[in-house]
Image 1 (tube, rainbow over the protein chains, first blue to last red):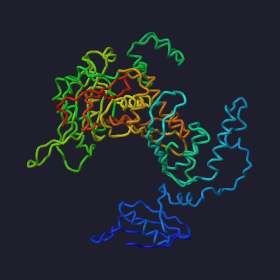
Image 2 (cartoon, one colour; image 1 turned 135 degrees about the vertical axis):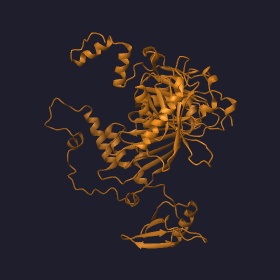
Image 3 (spheres, each protein chain N blue to C red; image 1 turned 135 degrees about the horizontal axis):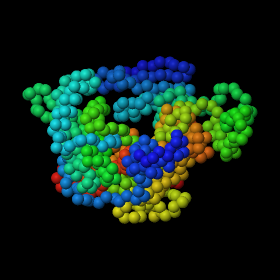
Image 4 (tube, one colour; image 1 turned 120 degrees about the vertical axis):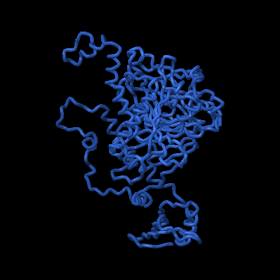
Amino acid sequence: MVSFRDAEENAVWIRIAWGTQYRKPNQYKPVYVVYYSQTPYAFTSSCPLRSNIPLLGQALTVASNHHKIVKMDLRSRYLDSLKAIVFKQYNQTFETYNSTTPLQEKSLELDIHMDSRIIHENRIEKERVQRVTQETFGDYSQPRLEFAQYKLETKFKSDFNGDILAERKEPLRCLIKFSSPHLLEALKSLAPAGIADAPLSPLLTCIPNKGMNYFKIKDK
Amino acid sequence: PTSCGARGNLGELKDYFIGATPLQKRLESVRKQTSFVPTPPRRKIPQCSQLQEDNDPQKVAFLLHKQWTLYSLTPLYKFSYTNLKEYASLLSAFIAAEKQKGLAVEVGEDFNIKVTFSTLLGMKGTQRDPEAFLVQILSKSQLPSENREHKVLWTGWFCCIFGDSLLETVSEDFTCVPLFLANGAETNTAIVGTWFQKTFDCYFSPLAINAFNLSWMAAMWTACKMDQYMAATEFLWSVPCSPQSLDISYAIHPEDAKALWDSVHKTPGEVTQEEVDLFMDCLYSHFHRHFKIHLSATRLVRVSTSVASAHTDGKIKVSLNKSSYVIFPYCYIVFKMYGICIFHIEEAQWNANLRQ
């Protein structure tokens, strides 16, 4: 059973309840699809029955007059964030602030009335980290994602211990998962906190640009 | 106590303790939650020992596939292994009384419960260690028609492994079983704990496993040779960033983890501090190469391997794969003073009885 609702401009909400020829559609486990008619994108909620997914894909393709549907490696609980990433709307700065504010005052949070004998060590490095982080992530609030997953199949290479796993031809098979209530904000705070280098790895910073949060990485 | 050199000045407190007795030093380290004995830089990978012969495989099987919460326990005053039956009925009455007070609200039905105390042979490090013992709360079915099978509601066991340094300090009236492991509802753990505290004048405190010990466990469990790996070697770090928390889970294929360990491991039969550090450093550097994040600056919270898993909150689970013919009969607890325990599994042959 399918029902439609027009939501905000260009968005159609579709609710699908699945049944079989013997059973009535199950209204308690529907799948929702949000389709933006002016764009080639549709967002679907998780489908309880995996076997229905290709059918859903086919139906959407035909109904929207496209010829192919491709699943993106992007998943989140926040539809607005997914929209922001996919439609590249996340990098708009909504606040108006004076962008010529000197960076030092903002980032180092030093009270200028403080005792002048107290200094910030590594001031230059801290400023560099702040600047690089801002260039990478921007000043806007990040779209909200809860996790990023990386399936790595890369060889082990160590800087300091050359002979560890030197003979091993096979890569290390790793699965790395980052989870957070607000992943991109958390990643943004890592370099200023000293937990990560700046610039952060492109594997992480590319998430909004590439519109992916599931990756498979192999050695080239 | 030695003559007091501390005149209200904290700086002199250190001098005061130089002359203190071993017991005082231990109490001080308990209070400060530090380890009195420096970590041994190497630990032997334990081999089959005489202890295994005393082992009852049936009894040890209960250890597997359950999550245990660890507590450390001060010595029990006037505890006797000959009074186990009496303790069982006293604890049973206590639990019943508590339930009537409405403190322990478990299942809807009014179960009759039965408590058992039994010794657990072989779960100790040296012959000097006191015997481990097991306490179980079982439910008895009310209906006479039903099979009178007892369902285990809660299990706790007390043990002492390599407690030599402890045993030296306590007098004869005390029984040292410093490690307590519980599985089952927390309300039951609390009731049993209260009864023990009242009866034997002891004190329980939750045992946290710090990142240092978790790394050791991860290395030792990865070092265990398995015929079949069922699970990845997985680490979980919690990143102290604000305002949002971040968890990083890093799972490696168990064969690759073992290959890395084998490449790092140099001394046969022993695991050294350098090897553990190097193993962890390799993992950190592989991660850093890809993500530019320093995992060493974050907090290791959980390690999990095919053999066992441990969480910093003091929770441990031993997983064994029955189809693997090299399985682990034995949980060794290496005890470090009053607070810190390392739990590692020893590789040895199972008794044929257990291969089912």
